[in-house]
Image 1 (spheres, rainbow, N blue to C red):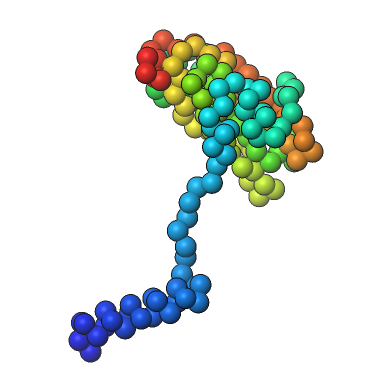
Image 2 (cartoon, rainbow, N blue to C red):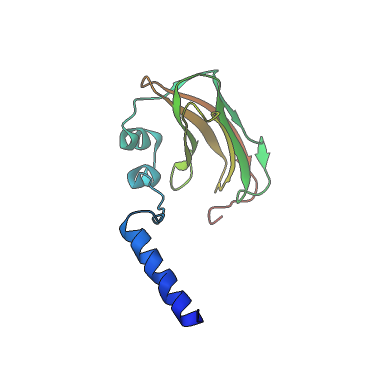
Amino acid sequence: MTRRKALTRSAQVALMLGQLGLLPRVAAAAYATAAFEAKTVPELMKALGAGAPAESKDVTITAPDIAENGAVVPVGAATTLPGAKRLLILVEKNPSVLSAAFDVNESVEPAFTTRVKMGQTSNVMAVALMADGRVLFAQKEVKVTLGGCGG
């Protein structure tokens, strides 16, 4: 078999598999654009269709007291409550209050860590959206000595 025939035959097989729906499709991230464009916590809760958050000791946030560089601030959010469907990390004084959103199901432990940018000293919040409609949060003030959001 020549190289030309092999390429032609493999293209025909790929076309046939594509028509049958057996090839993977392009994956695209889906997120709520309005949520990431929200400037305040009440705007964010409205965009997500959630109620006002209530403080809870069952939601925890981990972050440094002082961040030397606001461009890379390590932040973690977790909850011990069953029934969490989404965890959010919010930075109140950032241009966009929502910094990260993590979907949770019964197969995923609701504990996440990431790095966020902070332009200035601000309250950082971990918010848990529960399956029963409750919105619970924990917050911590993080002092930034060198801004990361254009600072």
